Amino acid sequence: MTMTQDDILALVRSGAGRLTAAVDDHEFQQEMARSEVRLARKGIQLLRTDIGQYLIGQAVESILVAHRALETVLPEDTTEIRKLQTQAHNGRSFIQWLDEAIQRGLDMEQLLQEEQQP
Image (cartoon, rainbow, N blue to C red; front, side, top):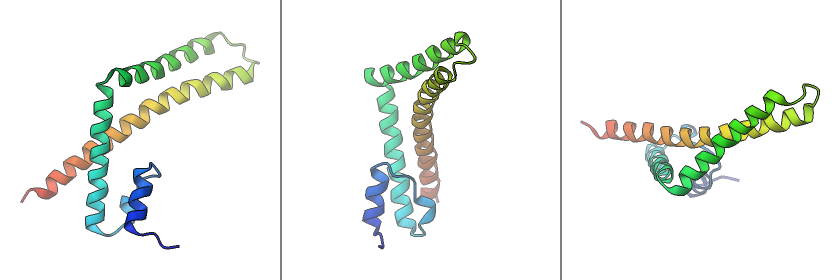
């Protein structure tokens, strides 16, 4: 099955991943970069909202609670240790994914601006 640019854009917009490097078409790559810029701006806007602050706070709290519990869990309680490690990992991952999306978009914005300069 051959995918069209519209199919690929739909996948990327649905969060299926970054395909920019795999495509030679310059115009398509620019559209992908602009999509990443828009995503970054939405991420920044989210962080400025009450819900964004709440979600970041919950992620940080999840990490802290897991770390505190890891200090007192019995070493032989491997099930609880794995549960707490997963809890901390999930909180860190959420923050990291948001940070990466914002940073990638800001980087793309800078590249697009540099391309527009004579």
